[in-house]
Amino acid sequence: MSKKILVVEDTEDNRQILRDLLGMAGYEMIEAHDGAEGVVKAAEHRPDLILMDIQMPVMDGYEATRRIKADPALAAIPVIAVTSYALSGDEDKARAAGCDDYIAKPYSPRQMLAKVRSIIG
Image (cartoon, rainbow, N blue to C red; front, side):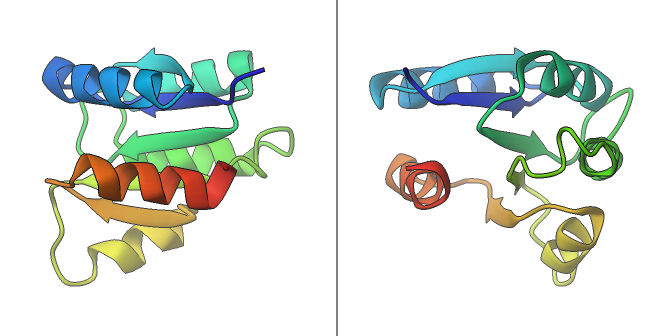
């Protein structure tokens, strides 16, 4: 059975890149278009990993991660913050919200797959 990855990302182009990359690597991808939908889909699908954009409409990635990590049934799911806001202190802010790891956009496909594999195999 393939590992499930929830991608919470508001930009269709970014979701398409990840859809292609993760699909070719044998992962099943579930998509959410904003943080609020991400929280719902995390509870519904119980993915093996969540790739969480930070800047999104409705609910940002920090708040979505806090809500996921506050739910005992979801708290163990690793969350990687994926953001183009790679300023000094942003990684600390993501980790403070509960993110387990952090990757800055733009990332190389090889870098993203290495990060995913290091966490869920």
